[in-house]
Structures are given as C-alpha cells and as structure tokens.
Amino acid sequence: MGADHTRAFVVVMDSVGCGGAPDAAEFGDAGANTLAHIAQACAAGRADVGRAGPLHLPHLDSLGLGAAIRLASGADTPGLSAAPQGMWGALSEISRGKDTPSGHWELAGVPVPWEWTYFPNTTPAFPPDLVALVCQLAGTDGILGNGHSSGVPIIAQHIAAHLKTGWPICYTSADSVFQIAAHEERFGLERLLKLCADLAPHLHAMNVGRVIARPFTGTADTFHRTANRHDYAMEPPAPTLLDWAAQAGRATHAVGKIGDIFSMRGIGKLWKGQNDLALFDHLDHLMAHAEPGSLTFANFVEFDSLYGHPRDVAGYARALEAFDARVGALLRCLKSGDLVIFTADHGNDPTWRGTDHTRERVPLLAAGLGARPIGLRGFADLAASVAHHLNIESQGIGVSFL
Image: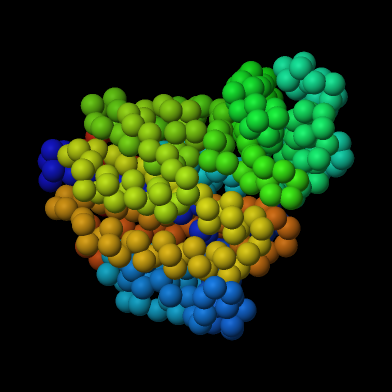
C-alpha cells in the first residue's frame, strides 16, 4: 500500500511490562511481571478497591495481550485468555537501563550506547559540587531533600521548610534522573523551569539522563503536583523513527511526554493534556484527522506515575480497565492502511519490592494488519516495522516483523 494511504500510531502504555526479561536477575528483578501479577491479584480478590473480580481487558486481550504475557514469561494470566485477533508478541530491550528514555529511544530504533550515571541511595545522594551549582543557579543558600524518593512523599516531608526558605526540593530515584520540586507561586514556575534548563547541560555531561521540573501548588495539607512538569532529557544519540519520518516529509504527532523524551526532535506537533484521559481524547482526534502517511507517537504515563511507583495494584488495574474501554472505540475508527501498535517501555510491577521500575519484556499488540504471532523480538524491531509500513527508510538496527 502506498505511503499516501498509510498511517501509523505507536501507543506506549508506560510501565505495562509482561515479565520474562532474559537479564532481569542482573537488575534484581527476576520474577517481576507487571501484567501477570496484577491479573493474578485481581483473580484472587486482592485488587477489589474501586473495581472487582478478574482483570477485564477484552479489547487488548482480543489483540493478544494474554498470549503475549504467556509467551514472554510463561505466567498464568487469569481473565486474559482470548484467542488473538491481532498481531501479537513480546519485545526485549538491549539498552542497559530500565528507564523511560532508554525504552522509548530503543523502541524508536536507537539503543542507548552508554552507561547512565546513577546517584547512590544515600543521604546525601548528590556530590557537594553539584549541590553548590544548584544553589548558585537557584540563588539559594541550600537545597532540601538530597536523596532517593518518590515525588509526593518528599514534597510532603519538606514542603513546610520549602515554603519558609524557598529552597528547592531535590531528589532522585533508581533511574538516571535529577528532579527538582518547587511551589509554583512561592518559588515560581518560570524560575523552576529556568533552573532545570540551566542545570541540564551539566547533568547531561555527567550522563544523567533527565532533569525534571516537578512543580506543585497548595499548602502543606493540600498540595498537589500540577500538569506543568517538564523533562529536560538528553537527546538521542542518533536519528530515531520520528526523525526518519520527518526527514521523509511525513507529518509527526507527539502525544503526552514524547516531546520531552525525544527533546522535540522530529516532532511536528505536540499534544499535551492534564491526564491520560485527556491524552486519549487527543489520540481519538488524531485517529479521525491525522494526515495520510503520518506517524503518531503517544505515551500514557499514569500507569507508571500514579500506580506503579506507589505500588497500588487496584489502582493500576482500574487504570488498565479504563484504558481498555477507550481502546475499543479507538479500534472501531481504524481506516484502511492504519497500523496501531500498543506496547510499553519497561515494567513497574506494583506487587514488587521497592518503588522503582522493573526489568521486563513488554507486550507488542498491533491492529490493522490481520492476526498472527510475531514471537519474541527486540524493541528496535518496532521502529523498523513502522518504517516499513510507512514506506520510509529504516536507519536503525531493527528488523521489520511485517
């Protein structure tokens, strides 16, 4: 089919892994399985908060979700037993990270060729010269935090001191990341964004993948993080699928965090939203109106941020079921020549120890090109396959499964 009649939609369900990564033990994650463990918890009645019963994902399962989990890990998948009606398989990552940039870049054809820098899980976590630089750029006499944490707990711990002193709250995680939380009024949103932008080149030179601005509002008792988060990520080390499409003159659309993850490279139009439901509205709009020959790349982050890191099994199950309900309507709007791929960038098993991502394979589910298994493939094969579908040159290491 010619390029004028084809479109591609890549939908990343952030952290929705399916276990079985060959190198999981090297990351301390042998046995982690985001989807299987959620399904098993639901079937056992351990996720009946705001929902009840076995995990109900009829549309994703009809594409092959249960089959993909079983292929990837051999795990039991109660509630997910449909005969696949789409193209299905599972993908393994070769980049040496279980983080957002590594996963997305490799899905887009570019594995990470370097080792990321991670901060030690100590207090303090950051070297004195880095702290001094943050203070210099922020115009403050100190910082708060200076350790490993999730965002909400560390804000709760330090918000009173932050509102009193104006010092930024700085923290990290098991990812290669430096995060700064600050009050949009007391510290100033533009000041926070400038601080992160000015700090990013120094952190990137250290191979720290992202500097993230995490603004919030409210008081110690009522604070909430806002939608003005911004990631200052290192640029991919080579042209990605988005660059390939743009170089070929195709329209490209980025939904959600994709603009931040790819430093806006190869992106024609950015679509942001307050939450994942708003992002799905954009995806519906693009399904109806995106140009012939176009590429849409979407990230749905709340599985990871709201439910994976806080280890909320029931919340994760509710989010999956709400997403699946929207998938049904989306699939009914496919046009001839459309390819829609659902996948993930890493795992974040809400039944696992700790609060960090888990090293897992990810499902690959595709609609629009019939039903067949693709087996176990590499992340970069997704980019090669989308390029093949759009009839553009693949510049990465992947091999098309189309």
